[in-house]
Image (tube, rainbow, N blue to C red; front, top):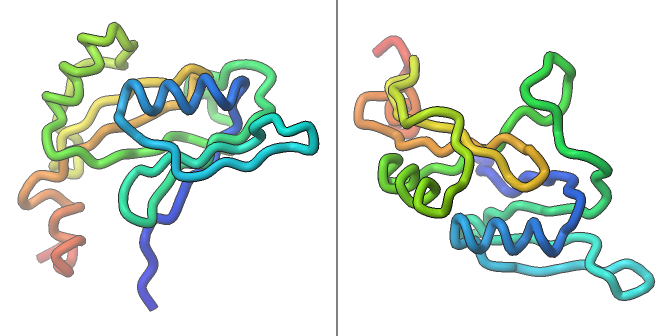
Length: 143
């Protein structure tokens, strides 16, 4: 049985602001929302790709810590066809990035940014011959 990425859920301080951030910065559109008993949005799902979405869940009290050793959420990764263009787009919007796009050990190019609550977001461009590319094409890492 094959599995694909379905969704990632992250707790945020303000679900409406988080949904606006993901729409404005990355173009992700609202897919659906759930409300609490008072009618206030408690969860907003934003579509990343066909049948793939990010759940933004109300209830965070403070920003996420920056890369400590504790177990839990590490980052979410979005694939892009042009990592340099994505980086330039975020720079134009004056969004914090953790360094410029660089070549990773896997053979793909990537960079990191953060959302409004400090959650780490990676953007990766899968390059031909990279570990990801080879895996996606059904090849083994040693081939």
